[in-house]
Length: 213
Image (cartoon, rainbow, N blue to C red; front, top):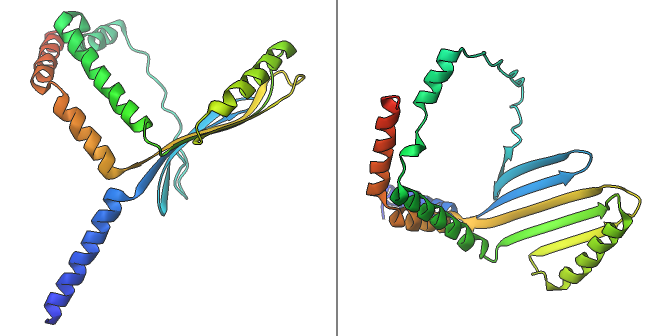
C-alpha cells in the first residue's frame, strides 16, 4: 500500500468517525428556572465537549452590548400600510383551518414522541410557602402524595416554610436526543405535511396581502 492510499484511508476514517460523532452524540437541551425575588430563566445546548448558552445571550469578550434601539412613532398612514402587509387570515375557510389544526396535531405528536424518550429529566429543589400556612400544609401533603409515583427521571424536593410567604428554588429540565433521531422525526413530519395545500394557502394569503385587501 502506497503513501497516497494510506493518507486516503486515514482521511476516510477520520470523516467516518466525525460522521458517527455528529449523528449519534447525545445532545442535551436544558432549561433552568431560578425562583427568587424575580423569576429568571436560561437555556443551553450541550454536546460533549461543547456547550452553548441560548438564552440569555452573553456578549463576546471585548464587545459591549448594543443599547436598545428607540422605536420611532409611526404615523397613521404607516400604521395602515403595515396592517395591509400582514396576512389576512379571514380568508381561511373550514378546510384551511382543519389543515392547520392537523399540522398542529402532528407537531404535538412529534413533541410527544420526544418526551416519551427515557432520556429526559426534571429536577426541582424548592423551599418556602405561601402567605397562608394552611395552603402551605396542603402543598406539602400533595408533595408527599405524588412523590412515590414519580418516575426516576423526575426528582422533586420541597422544604416547607410556613412563615416565608413565597417559594424559592430552582427547576431544571432537559431532554437528551441525538441528531439522527431529530432528523428521523423531522423527515416523518415533513412527509406527512400536505405540502401542495400549504403552498396554495400561502399563495392565497400572499396575493391577498399584495393587493392590500
